[in-house]
Image (cartoon, rainbow, N blue to C red):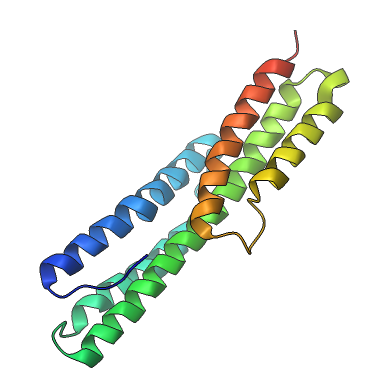
Length: 158
């Protein structure tokens, strides 16, 4: 993501775009996991706190000064990194929970096929491959969840 801006309005728009891209889904994932598992995952709340600490620091600097702008960009980068890390972590946790649930719903004769389908799709989407961009991995998880749901529906116990 391009972190360039030349005015406070552009900085505010940049922050809005970051929030739309990462924060909203991260927050939704946290809420979904809490509902799904009926418990609070403190680790994700800590990740949000760490992200916010960088977001708040953005407003400590003068955007018109070259050093201030570099500091703002540095904190925005750290803000994004925390949101991305938390988002990927919540996707992994949701996948774990959903996979276990789906596996139980699949007929015993189809469990091995189900495992293989999901593993192949995850490899194809490269969701665990850290050389793949974060945005591609996020999109991959979204596709993998849909595939998991579709596969589960095809192989459900009768």
